[in-house]
Image: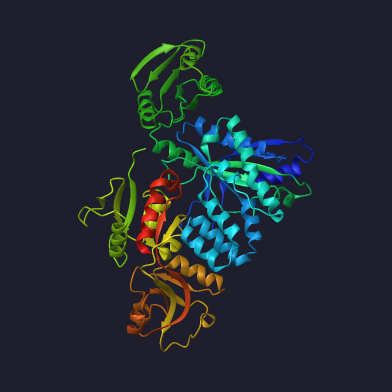
Length: 344
Length: 211
């Protein structure tokens, strides 16, 4: 959803005060070139923080990601983050051509350290960079990354990036989530798009990531004149549900009550349905002219909770048939609604 | 967490024996009958699952198993987003494009439009011909693609070869190479995070054995 959000920021919110914080929950359609039958529509929930490129912005997004997952009820949540710009700069420092870059990224993404070592030896990597690549593949803590440094002033920019993860770690510590965030140099997907950190969230019970995100400072400008740094994440709702199921959590079903209103007096019935709907009850009208017995039978088959039979006026009590309990009683519609409690 | 680490092994075919041997040398011996789908191993932290080599990449990607021994070609065919932790260097083979010896087609460039291609690797095949700008009809067969030209099913096949014997026997000639493959130790991306220590230990033992 980042592309539509970027378009909206550029075209509809050109003078919005920055930083801009946006969220969405939406169905996303993704065209896949693959001939395998992959799902092309899924529901995503995400946030974007636009107009700010401080480590604090990255920290806020990571902390929000973790608290969102915890709030959803997930246990043992972790976030692993890679560093797109660091990888790009390291590959440039090693003087790789496009094909070699693809190979290195592939080897990193596969975590094939034997293959990576071989490749670097065969392609004459300078030994300091070779060590940095191998060290980074082994690093898991952010402060381990920041303890790596390359000597020589031409590596100033690289060293600055390596060091910056220490600051991020300190910010995450303030949010009390630093223990849940790990470094992962194998996250090399879409590094052309991401300009800073890139991350994904997971839980041990599900073999697929729940979602992820990263910093994309050069993307929004593609939609217009605005050049705005941005960061954000998206979660796949389907995966979240799978993960919750895998850890044994019950997923609450819709708690809304279903009611059928039957009455010989159409105006009363229409009024009753409206009153119920206004209170958030799922109400429908008996329109077939079938008998009350048949209506109750229909209610059973359609998993309806109650059938309300009304007389000429809603001022007098209505008969409420509780389908599950198989009992009926007379109450006013207002009392019935009160008993149902808040439906919204 | 005291969950066992599940490692998938091909239940038949040319990869099965070397896979079991390699794991055995690394301290994971299969203890139970070959018939069993799930087998205990000599290392109580690991559990072996026997599955079709073809399916192993998908099992791994979705986390049904944590690790698996399978071919790089199969990982590519299934477009499985998995880690390939180690090249086990056995089961070497090449995915090639071949035509009957007497065919007039001598290179990929000469493949005529709408030619029929029989293969057990429909996904890689489609992508390969798409890249070369050739529109071909891909016929999926689940074995003995080399038979297809003889029966007039297809003029071209895409199949694996290791020694070239089968091709020679069936009077087929290679006109292009798509992919070189060996067997890999593949791993689910999330499982690697969960079991990093145990998996790295296993990797170290496997490398020690192969060197």
